Image 1: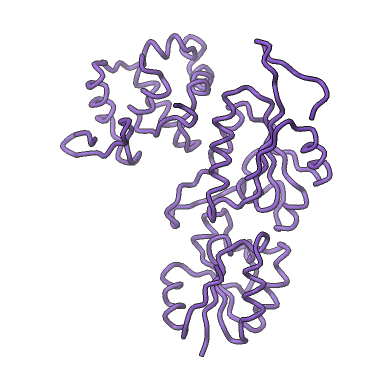
Image 2 (image 1 turned 180 degrees about the vertical axis):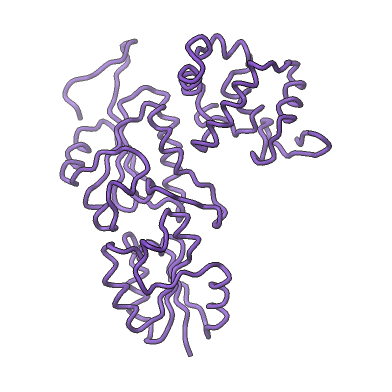
Length: 131
Length: 102
Length: 110
């Protein structure tokens, strides 16, 4: 938990919310569900961050084209996050490397960092949702 | 006669691919589809596993699933054959049976 | 309940949003607005067309707060505010304009 409490203009307490994404986009519904929860939660003006680890890094791979598999390509929606004031996007360096990916493969601006740094960030949160 | 082994789960998350390769006999075919296709990526931790599987098996991956996930042929390990849905049907029809490692 | 647009019957969900966004044509907005007793002006169309472009780019129907901000960025402050947008779409610019534009209900709207 963070030591000092931050408040918004109306005196409401701002909490640190972290959404941890660790599933690939189309094989299961977790990635899409997570994205929807983040977009809905963005209305509450909290301090939100999104973390992509494990197969979650595949969610933001550039160039997805789902026309032939008959599913909706929801990857462009990650680019709308900024307009929802979700600007803290963190990606695990180890997870990228394990999958043969680099930062250039990603469709949004992110901060790539080692797992040890992500562990520290997790430690600072008030609430963590893992998908 | 030969078995067509299919794997549709990410090898980074589930052990389906490992199990499949442990039991697949030489000469059988491995088809990666859905999240299974990630194992076929160049430079990924699974690369050696797939390369060694290719010595005794024909290894295929479903093109539409790779495309959906943002990967073109140049990101796939050389020697892995990309097939489309019609190719999937052909493989299933040619095989004596299909073992789905779901 | 399906709606009739240029001789075709288009499926909608229980709240009146088009079931298939690809079936949209301008006549959809005309038919829906007529049912709401609203006459569409070029100001309405600017917002409807903006929403269609927004969906094309981001594959999402924006929350009203985000729509307001995005309209402001594109068309200026005098249009990017709730008063102007609610003036055009009294049932809520998010819900009503998205419905006319053939988009799904904005994510996060209840």
